[in-house]
Image (cartoon, rainbow, N blue to C red; front, side, top):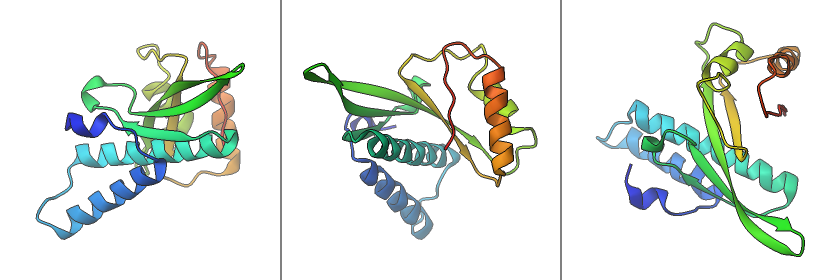
Length: 162
C-alpha cells in the first residue's frame, strides 16, 4: 500500500466515498479489482461505520485511517478526542475486522473464536473487533452467539452487539 495513503486521517464519510469511487473505477476501467483491494475496501468501510457509530453514541468527532496491511493489525485506526478531567486528549482505537461470509458453514461464535479471539492473537486494550456478517442471522442466533462469546471467557474482553 502506498505510504502516502495511510499517513493521513479522513472523515468516515470520505472513507466510504473513496471506497465507492474505487469500486466504480475498477468496474468501468481496464484496472480490475483484486482480492487484496477488496479486503482493504471492506475493512475501510467497516472501520468507517464503526467510527460513525462511535461518534453517534459518544458525541465525539472522529477521524479514520487505513493501516498498511504489512503491519498485520489493526486493519483501521479511529482517532477521537477523549475528555480527561479538564483536558482533552487524542486517543486512537484500533479496529480489527473479520468477515463472516455467506459461504461460511460453521456457527458465527465458532468463527469469531477461531479467527479473532483465539490464543494466537493478542490485542491492546484500545482495540475493537468488528465482525461483518454477510449472511442473514436471526435475533435468536445473534443472542446465542453473544452468549457463547461471553461463556468462552476470553481474557480482558467485553462483548456487545447492536
